[in-house]
Image: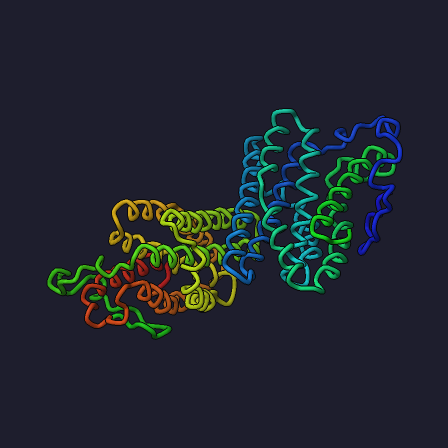
Amino acid sequence: MVNWPKRGMTRPESSRLRPRVAPTDLTKIDFTELVPDPVPFLGQAAYIQLEFFEGLARAVATAPTLPSKEGLSSAAGVALRKHHALIAELRRLGVEPDGVMAPFAPATDRFRQATAGADWYEQLLGIHVTSGMLDDYFSRLAAGLPADLGARVRVILAEEGAAAVLYSELLSAIAEHPGLSDRLALWGRSLVGDTLLIARSALKASDAADRLSGAVEPVFTELIASHTRRMDALGLTA
Amino acid sequence: MVNWPKRGMTRPESSRLRPRVAPTDLTKIDFTELVPDPVPFLGQAAYIQLEFFEGLARAVATAPTLPSKEGLSSAAGVALRKHHALIAELRRLGVEPDGVMAPFAPATDRFRQATAGADWYEQLLGIHVTSGMLDDYFSRLAAGLPADLGARVRVILAEEGAAAVLYSELLSAIAEHPGLSDRLALWGRSLVGDTLLIARSALKASDAADRLSGAVEPVFTELIASHTRRMDALGLTA
């Protein structure tokens, strides 16, 4: 089981990094059956990109150097494009985006506050970890959308954005400040629980999570595994 | 004479809204002769757009409603595109943008702080007034750049951005809050001095401003006149 709400979760045992049982044995329910309808999917995904944009824009404003500003502002531009492209998909469905996004605002705003971090470095890692996990997750969810829409959404979410610039900013910060890596390792770990809660909230039948955990578990296991790889690449223990 | 450094300047007399003497009589120096070299021009213009982006992004983050967020985030995207397009022009000239922008950072950062405002409405008017005046001003300056570059810069700066969305946000805010217009009128007036100082700092021979004031005065007079029209459109006394 994924430890949903606990902050500061400990390192997942290595056995969790691959499913103990092959997914087909676990359940007859396919993960894509849990994918929400297109309208709420797009509303939540669009609002999350807006949060990433706001976080990256704040990181631009507080960046210590002009090269950092430039890299981060490009990343902010990508998040903004994703937000507007997802909104455009809602309009294409004949839906006004504001009403669709509004229900997701309170939880997503709380999520942003919880993952904002105490300083610029924690803020960068917060965006790196949460956008890395959630862009990946929503791309997987898109497999359960109508085929045309799903394909367009995956193209939207696949645009290279924050990952490369955040990786290189964090890598040089860690190299420069000896004490930073321990603090960031702890911080990175504490981000996982909040991010998985947001991911779970996107599922159609999140109220029946127990029955469906067999379908969900492998996907979340893979999310955590790629989080671990992302942290490893920075030399941080996940 | 333009009242350079005074904050809270009073309404310009109506006679100032058109040059008292035809520009050709005033001076033999053409305004475009005061235009800086392409590299510092692009560096300052690019950094100013970055400030507009940061201001608009902050306005997105603090916007009270989702429709406001959407409009302002589009405007932030436009400012960011202008910033990146001007930076691309620097690279086309074989120059690294960071070193070129850096000298403009302290004065522009102070300018942003001075024009940030005490609340969301003052912040919006701050961006509306300063970006309205400076986009216009840098487009005029571009007439003194080499023809190709000047034409491209005018296209970059002409992209419709913040003006329409800020206008409509401010107009509805003023209609909704009866006391707001007096406060915003005062605030709008106090922005002009700081903005003209930034504009003057862009000129090549700003240290010899007296000798050149004949060439500069008509341009600044027109900037103030269009500021007055912008404020009038909001029902605010300039």
